Structure formats: C-alpha cells, structure tokens
Image (cartoon, rainbow, N blue to C red):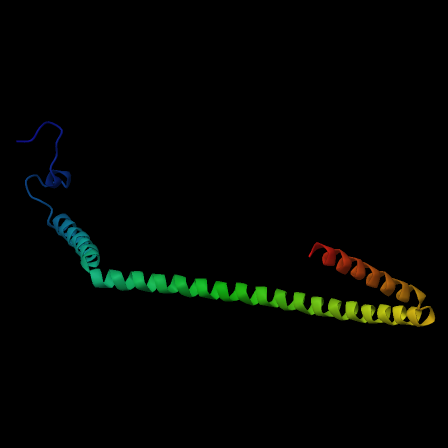
Length: 139
C-alpha cells in the first residue's frame, strides 16, 4: 500500500493502476544507453595495451616537442656565438694592426736613437752578472 501523497507513475498520467508503456520504454532505452557508455568506459580501462600505446604516443609527442625546442635553442646559441667570434676576430685584427703600427713606430725611434736600448741591454747584462756571481758564492 502507498502512503498518503505518494503517487505512482501511472497515477500521474491519469490512468490508475496501469503503467505508461511509452514512459517505461523511454526509461529502458535511456538505461541501455547509460549501461552501454559504462561498459565502453570499463572496456577502455581494461584494455591495458591500448592505454600503454596511448601513453607511449603521448610521451613520443612530448619528446619530439622538446627536441624541436632544444634544436631551436642550440641554433640560437650557435648564431650568437658565431656573431661573438666574428666580433672577436675583427677586434683581434684591429689590435694586431695597431700593434704592428706601434712596433713600426718603436723601431723607427730605436733606429733614430739607439742609446736607450743599449743602456737597457747593459742593465740586463749587469743584473744577470750579479745573479751569477751571487750563485757562484753560495755553491
């Protein structure tokens, strides 16, 4: 027996005691669809090989993306390094040219006035002589 205020599905439709066949069929159809989706979801979770393949493919895509990104970074760094090398080479050329010019100027000064060079060499010879004399006394 039903409690007060409780109505069955058939009483809502106005036919007491008889269930609505159309409503029951619609409910069965919906239940079957829900059950089918549930079965598909369970089958997908149970398919370990497919899940593993999917995981491998996702990892492969990540690795490819990282490789592309790393390649781009290497290319950028190589480009910058090439520029730095070019600038360093140009600077070295400029410095070498400047050093050559300074050497020419110094050579010309020495040719014009060799006395400072001779005095420097005499000083070096004197220092070497003193060192040899001091070492000879120690032995």
